[in-house]
Length: 463
Image 1 (cartoon, rainbow, N blue to C red):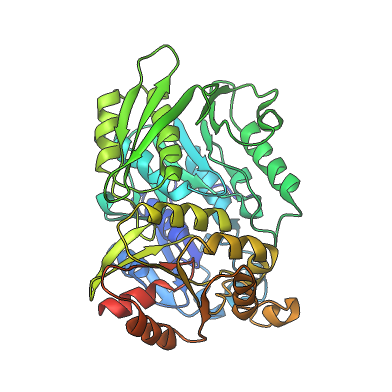
Image 2: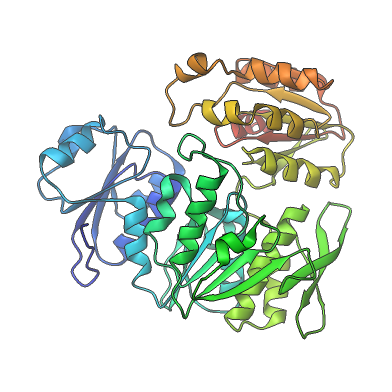
């Protein structure tokens, strides 16, 4: 594998530089003195940010973009082998790294690399930890899978030992990392286009835990089934958190204010319980906060600093994000695209003031929709009224839906079979017109999914 030498910066080209993670890594290398350039299919806020930093971004991926002065190319897992730039890199014998391999090499340059993993909650927990470290003046380097208002983006380059990043299990990418502290929030079925089954996923997380050195630490949710399969025989320290008194950090007495924001009591072994209050809704965020508190304790950050940081955290983009109000209808946007995430978001919304809870859901990938069809239907029935958009194909070919026999209309029928009201429209225009005619003052409208469904709410708001 090609090795990046941070003492000898070279020319690095990112294929797909506009991705949330790729753009962040490009910024880190640029700040370290590397000559950074790259390509993407279209302009975006992230590519504009890179250009403002003096990074060359080419739009459209073509073989001629790969010039002889490039010393290393970086690819995401979404880049196919028939991509013209991928082919050109191979033909020119230019060394290359995957996004995960590069991120792993960057981690080696820090004394305390921290990796946050789990099927759900990575971005929010990484953001909570980021807020805590910033409040503590720890000057960390941060790589977040969403936009954090406090830092004005998804990346921050610090000058201390701390490097904080999300660690995604998809394609086993987090096994290329070198963390000293690892967090596992939860382990569930997802990415079934790559993993064989849940046991395959659990095996991947077990291997992630085994990456931690003897002087490192694993912080893990005590409610993960068969926890000992993940933790047995690890040489590192293990800290558990959860809603069980058996955990090292456990929470209870959750209450909600008039906006659905939780407060809770956190118990730590041998210490008096402490009350925390959050600005982000939902019991799932109490768990994310507990993991963050356990990490802060491990790093020696004072409790009051942690309380203030968590109380000041208002969320990241696309995580129960308030978008505005139109005609008395509150519009929220959320990234949820897995049944567990949908349930957590809609349960959080139940504590938010509203008359009727509308959910406009855009399924994400054909394989995920097929694999969790019934689970999606059950989760979505937590909303009063459901509107479905077409499936967002993402990395999958458009023909796959037909071959799998899956579509949003199939999901609609599954929801209706549960006796619930559900509508489907093939275009955003039709959805927006339907909502304008049917939502009334006092309703809560959530646009939900990992694709471009947020445009519906933004269009309704005139953004």
